[in-house]
Image (cartoon, rainbow, N blue to C red):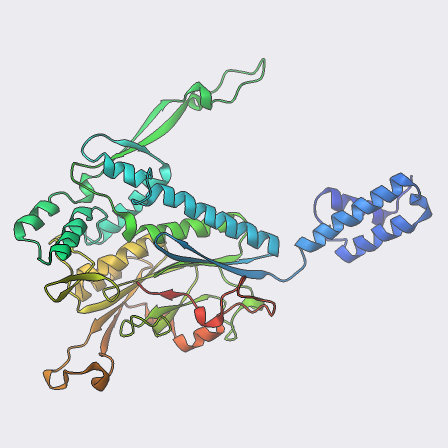
Length: 460
């Protein structure tokens, strides 16, 4: 059978799973149709070949040549709501990316959540002072990120403050502040230096080995071994990775989407937001900036998420906000921050209304946002300025003169004093422009896209 050069090119394109750069998709379709109609392809075999070619090219056309799509999903997870936003070449890739992100989140939760029975962290805490437990490399990676944040903040961030948290919860229940002796006892049981992480090489059980075919060479000695990680803490200690886990998990979810073909995207877990890549021009907001816009919550309006103090543009960056205005302890009529200083055992000063940190590493930005609330303005700014690629915005409550104290409705919102690191202002823009940050597809529905006013917000 003699085929024209165009037909050969069309068949080769289909067999290769792509359309040759020299043969346009619509041209291949017309070739296939001519093949089906041509007398040279009459008969069962010719018709089947032509039909298969038409179907294959249709699949190719469904997955290429169109505009990128943007999809959004929100699910309840990790004691909050997580929103995933992905830009992909086509609808199928977008769905695969979203599902891969949720799988990553689930895998992280069963390892890192101390309230999930059987998780690595739960087993570490249950066996404190007894023995080390085997953990997944993912857990070791998160602990390494926590140790880095602790080291860079001079110990202001510490994921072992569990004994202090338990002490202050009990203090609130009995309506009595902890004594100095109780604080000293709890502080003796915290510290990243008391967390032991070990790695060892052990023999792999035969059940894990794939059966070798007859005559195959013996396995490499390294294939007969595997690395095992164990973690142990001292008696009375309690790991709590809640201060860094959301940022860490957001980064892993983003990387997993990238491995599955995402062009750009964003993961928002409460006040922890990580954005990667740039949106294509067709999906950029009206202003034309292809970076991701994220709002910073105004601490003067803790119950209104639409009130934004400022907004930042992100590309392969994370932003995290930590504040005192959502949670805390009420003891004998006095409000205490829920953020505890591991160095003193006491709640931090609430003069710092909120701390926002931007960094390349989402786990580091998460940990440092908490650390800023502990360090305060001067020390916090000094730490941030010493770190490359890290910026911060610290909002402090301005003193209210006694002459104007009184009903808040009369004097209006309490004023704030802003303290910025040297490079933070370069990231900022007017938060009112976030109205243009929504998806641009005309067919967007509530199931596939968030409304424009639901722009991601960095808030505690």
